[in-house]
Length: 488
Ligand code: NAP
Image (cartoon, rainbow, N blue to C red):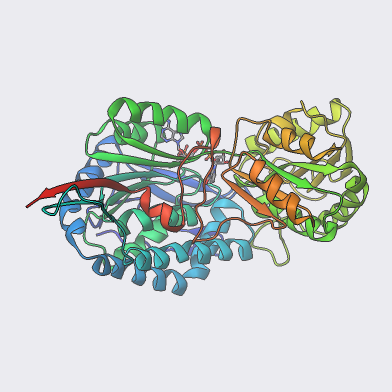
C-alpha cells in the first residue's frame, strides 16, 4: 500500500497518490504536478487516475453501498467523528498544504480547514436526529408514512477555491446519509483532498465508502455522468461546466446538485453603520483574494453615503499586506493563476475605459509578480453595463455603483442571471426585511459579511444552481423520499 509522506520541505508537499479506491492507495498511469500560485514553483504531485481507475472507484463505491447503508446512523457517524478529531490534530499541516497549492494566507487556510472539519462532526450528529412523516390514514387498517433513504453512489466534483472545506461539505452529509462517495478535486488543488483522504483512511471508513480520483476532468466527468451506478452528481464550480454536466445527468436520469458561480450585490443604504459596512465589505472582498463564489461583486451604495464609504474602504484596503501566504502578516495572497489575473485586469481596464475612477489599487503590487498578485482595488463611478458589473470577477476589486431609491437598488441587485448571495446594510428594520426578502438570492446577509455556517443551507437560485449544502437541507439533498402505504 502506498502511504503519503506529507512534507518533504518547507515549500513542498509530497502526496504519493491521488488515487484511493476500495480502501487502498494506488499507483496510476500518470502524475499531475501541483504549482504554488505565489511562486510558480512545483510543490507536489499526485497520481492521476485513468478512466478505468475512475470506473473502478465507482464500482468499489457501489459494492460498499448496501452494507454501509444498513449500518445504524450512530455507526456511520463514528468514522466521521474520528475524522473530525484527526483533522484537528493535523490542522497545521493541512493548512500549509492548502496555502501552498491555493495561495490562501496561512491563517485563512487554517480557518478553512477548521470550518471544513465542522461538517464532519455536525453531520455525524445530525444523522441521528429523527425525521419522516406519518400521514392521515384512509381507515383503521391502513398506515401511510414517508421515509428518507440513501441513494447509492454520489459522485462529487470540487473547485480549487475551497479545496479542503468543499471536500468535507460534500462528503460528510452524503456518507452520513448512508451513501458512498467518489470524489474528484480540482486539478490545481488536489493536495488538500489527498491529505483529507489519508485521514478518512485512518478514521476507519469501510473500504469503498469513500474514494478519491484525481485527474483529467473531462474523462472523469464522463465516467461520473455515464456510469449507471452513479445516482447523483454533486458539483461545485463554474456555471458553464455545471450546466453541461447537469444536462448529461438529466439524459442519464441522475440527480445533479449544482453549486455554481455568483455575482453578489452588496447594498449599502445611507442610514447604515458605514464603518461596519466597510469592515464586512473588506472581509467579503478580500477573503481568498476575492476568489469566492459569495464575494461582493457589485457594491451598490445610496448616493449620500458614497464618498464616506469609499474613504473608509480605501483606508482599510490600503493597509492590507499582499504577498506570499506563508509570510507573517500577509492577508491577501496571489490569485490562482495568470489567467485569473488577466481576467481581473480586463475587468478593471474595461471599467476605466467606460469612465470609472480608481480610489485605491488598480493593478500590480510593488515588488510582486504582476502575473500572480493584484492590489486590492476600489473603483468609483462604475457603469452598470461594464464587465465587472455583469460578470463574476473573482479578484480583490470593489466596484462602487450609486443608487438613489430603494426600488432602484433592488432592481440593480436582481439584474443578473445569478442568485447565490447578497448583502444588505441598513439600520432601518423595516427596510432590512422588505429589501432582504425582495432580493432574488438563495442567501442574504443583513449587516453581516459571512454566510457559510455549518448549520445553514448554503446555496443559490437562478443561474447559481439549486443545491443546498450545510444544515439539514444538506442531508435532504442526498436522500430519496419513499412513501409507503400499508394495509393490514
Ligand atoms: P470549474 O472550472 O467549473 O471547475 C470546477 C470543478 O469542475 C473542478 O474540479 C474541475 O476540474 C471540474 N471540471 C472542469 N471541467 C470539467 C468537465 N468537463 N467534466 C467534469 N469536471 C470538470 O470552476 P472553477 O474555476 O474551478 O471554480 C470556480 C467557480 O466555482 C466559480 O464560478 C465559483 O463561483 C464557483 N464556486 C461556487 C461555490 C458554491 O458553493 N456555489 C463554491 C466555490 C466555488 P479541474 O480543476 O481538474 O479542471
